[in-house]
Image (cartoon, rainbow, N blue to C red; front, side, top):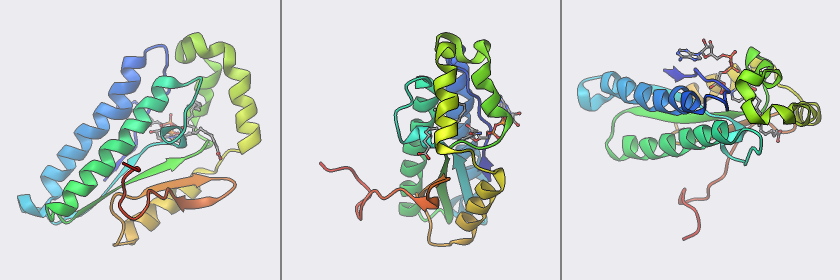
Amino acid sequence: MVNNAGVNNEKDWEKTINVNLTSVIRGTYIGLEHMSKKNGGQGGVIINISSLAGLTPAAYQPVYSASKHGVIGFTRSIAALASIGNYGVRINTVCPAFVDTPLLETIEKEENMGEFYQYKDKLKDMMKCYGVLDPSLIAKGMVSLIEDESSNGAVMKITTSRGIHFEDFGAHQTTKI
Ligand SMILES: NC(=O)C1=CN([C@@H]2O[C@H](COP(=O)(O)OP(=O)(O)OC[C@H]3O[C@@H](n4cnc5c(N)ncnc54)[C@H](O)[C@@H]3O)[C@@H](O)[C@H]2O)C=CC1
Ligand SMILES: CCCCC/C=C\C=C\C(=O)C/C=C\C/C=C\CCCC(=O)O
């Protein structure tokens, strides 16, 4: 199961939270209800789509960034629970940088960008600087996560400079305490 739907809308930012985060949480819980071996399911893999903006501050997309940070936090937490509870379900996050899809066109729209519309050229410069990925690379990353039976709670990053790679949270998967 892939929870992929997402929007970029800083003007209607509640919608951004609802689509990008609330629906990912709801989708994951519904998926687990059917897939978890604890409920008589056959197990499987859930992938939640976040973004590189879920790992770094995004000055002109604060709520988009918050929603994507939330996806990572929720997914890593529920993955830990799935492992402890022997659900037989692996749950991972994918964080692409800019990808060539219609979502990028929202940068040009005041109805999506709201007060941040004034910064659209800065975002376009970022895209020029970092490049824009072909969607096929995201599909390749997802297939590898599905096939790698050891992956659970992984945060896959996909960028033009480093390709498909993983965020390293250290052996204990926690921040320094
Ligand atoms: N394009 C990019 O640069 C990046 C995109 N992402 C994420 O990838 C995911 C896919 O986005 P893209 O394909 O790029 O954008 P897109 O705009 O091409 O596709 C988004 C999809 O979400 C669906 N959707 C939106 N609101 C919905 C709702 N309320 N109910 C059901 N479906 C809904 C749309 O119908 C559309 O098919 C999103 O979660 C996005 O945040 C992550 C990093 C970079
Ligand atoms: C910063 C968000 C820009 C909003 C534009 C609309 C949609 C973009 C969706 C994304 O999820 C873009 C993803 C990442 C951007 C954040 C950082 C780029 C750094 C790239 C790199 O280091 O390779």
